[in-house]
Amino acid sequence: AQRVTQPEKLLSVFKGAPVELKCNYSYSGSPELFWYVQYSRQRLQLLLRHISRESIKGFTADLNKGETSFHLKKPFAQEEDSAMYYCALKPKNTGFQKLVFGTGTRLLVSP
Amino acid sequence: NAGVMQNPRHLVRRRGQEARLRCSPMKGHSHVYWYRQLPEEGLKFMVYLQKENIIDESGMPKERFSAEFPKEGPSILRIQQVVRGDSAAYFCASSQGQGIETGELFFGEGSRLTVL
Image (cartoon, rainbow over all chains, first blue to last red; front, side, top):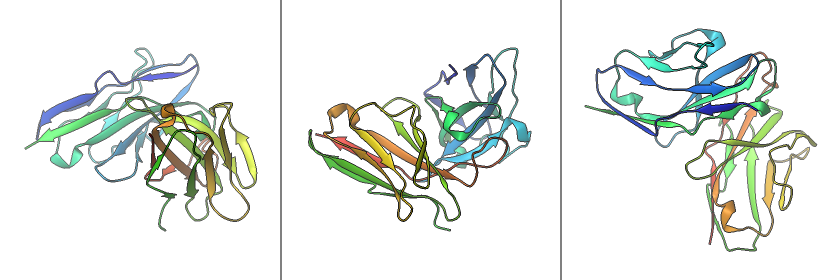
């Protein structure tokens, strides 16, 4: 069975500092990895997915199959990045009902 | 498009009562998913429905929990004889397709159930 681990409950950085939110996964097959974000008083929403290979709001994430990781990075954090971030995985070529979430990391960006 | 609508946002029940949570998917979406988030945990899949059909209920507890998505009206997650351990945030999500290759899952704001 697949599992997603986000080791940090809280990550606190100053504005302008680099950010890395860690995500490790456990799955023997081909995974699809996602990052979801929940800003204060807003819905959970998709931030990015590894197959898109895109940068959203300055965030990037690279799938490292050797280390089974999908860390989320941003070179210069902004205050508006403060939110709850969830890493999620589903086996390739399966539907959304197979999506497994990590426990989330709260990012706090201070001025 | 108002997005995925869930109600009530907050629900308080005493042990033994019934809880009914409603979810209206985004317009044009026929796939509905329910997730539960217990304190300090990630979202966990409960059930996947299409209109009038339960497609996958592998995440649903065997007893007291049921879900439906009728031809008309919202999807409903029903919890009978609630216990304190049912206290959680229940999220509904919808999608246009199954999400096998493309597509996006859209979430509601959640319903927070508190069992006294």
